[in-house]
Image (cartoon, rainbow, N blue to C red; front, side):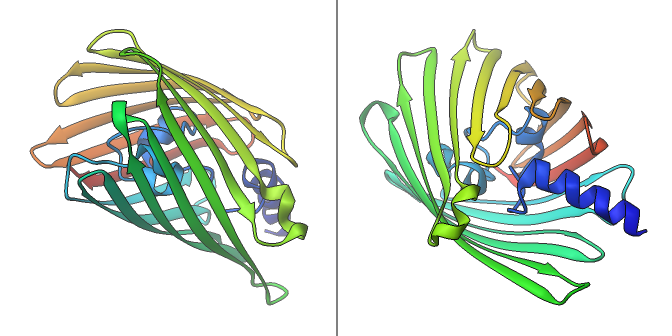
Length: 262
């Protein structure tokens, strides 16, 4: 049991740096932790500049876990409210194993400008608790994200997140930059580069394809560490069901699913 826990700690630090999960929501996971998905309630957590504006209220529940370790899981809930050119959101997430857990609270705000350019900010408090030595670590960080529409087909996204309140937590800072190219009405290509101080750069290349109005398929290759992902999104009236499966270099097979309102 202790050997399994040490492996998980090593893998967790490589993937998350003992911060909350890289991203939430099956759509993001199916795209190799791509952060800037629009019309997705988990933008409240992933990148506030992508929060929704065409619905007054939106809510979601999510769950994910590696196949081979039942004890390691992530559970989250989020709510997004929009009015006019402002959007607000709150997200609660839990990530844990039998002897370690992390609870985070995220508050987010996004302002929309002309040409649908956007600027979003979020404030996140995370508490990591290590049960074996009864030790807790608290972190408070700010994220700033922006969206620039280059033309009708190309959009640029950027985010500087986990900006800490204390100098000793500077290692948690991460910068993400992404491009979204709308090939046609059915297909989109995405590319994202994420750089953190204490982790290797992570690059994601993914595709979103609409099979029909209610059914979408996602796929991606992510490096640092290597991960192959595939996901399905199905809309049923005002409910959206999404699931994702991935093969991770260290965590092996993993699964996730979530439900959110339109």
